[in-house]
Image (cartoon, rainbow, N blue to C red; front, side, top):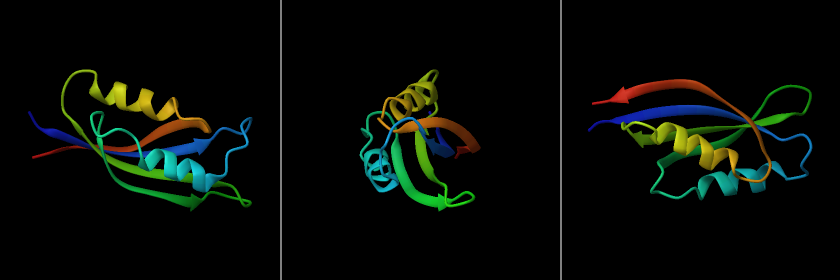
Length: 90
């Protein structure tokens, strides 16, 4: 099977006091059995707000992208996630 490259925009949960740097570190340490993290960086949004952009490669199999997104949302401090881009790798 092939692989899928996915780019996410991850917003911190406004109700949880987790520093953005701690959130970046937690996202970098997601288990490799779910997907391979290639890049995680914090980026400015507006008015001092920050978000995290995450690039990952996930096996192209049924349900694995959903499983990866569940792993992201299970991290303390993660608010909403948005897929910015997705493409199949050859």
